[in-house]
Image 1 (cartoon, rainbow, N blue to C red):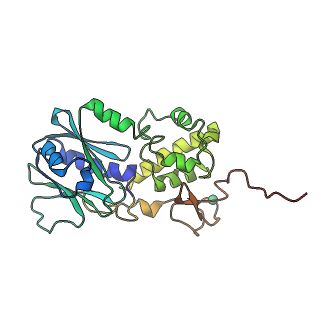
Image 2: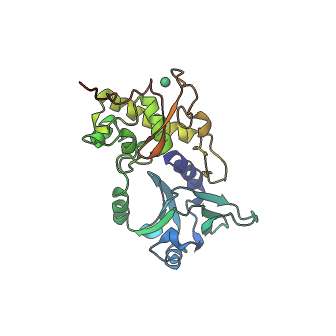
Image 3: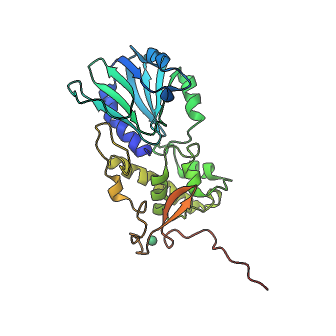
Length: 287
Ligand SMILES: [Zn+2]
């Protein structure tokens, strides 16, 4: 599932290509993508609009169009956004859901096997900000994201820190991969309650989040399943996971085998020495 580094990789590739171009034609083949708005309605709103910028907020990709119109896309589980040259006459990609044809003949294809991806057209900056602020919290690579911001978000939260990190309203853009990587970097067990982390741990977690995400962007994201960048190429972050998907392998820090467990309902990888479990459970012994 694409997380912040994967979406950011796509954004960086596409932003210079689409900025200033006009959407000549829009086709929405799958009504689920734009539901509850009808595909024809979305096509009409996009046709003829000029793309001014391509931005990212959390895992959302936002195409700012002229006249303060915005196309907000989410790739969800298996969405990809592919850039196809005019001269590319290969048959259309499998699982094609949306096709935007630009005025220079390039095509932007939203493909999506599982069909959870979405596109929403929003008019006006104010409505856009409302839409996003209801769904995503602080942007972890923004300079304004400090250990204090993280500490405030965690305060009073009894949820396990892994669930806290996966909640997009607490920290934007972190998913299963980068939550594991950040927690391992910080030496924090995924089941520790977020609100009970000490100040030094919050600072380590803050650094862990930022470093894990930056590493992911440097490696053009992780392709462990369907994720491809806008050129259809795989990222290489999966070759550099410190802990994620490494069950049974020796921990890179201490050599103890990495264990797979369940946290926040997700497969979670942990080193029991480097990430001490929350207070060891003691069995009640009969008197
Ligand atoms: Zn270890």
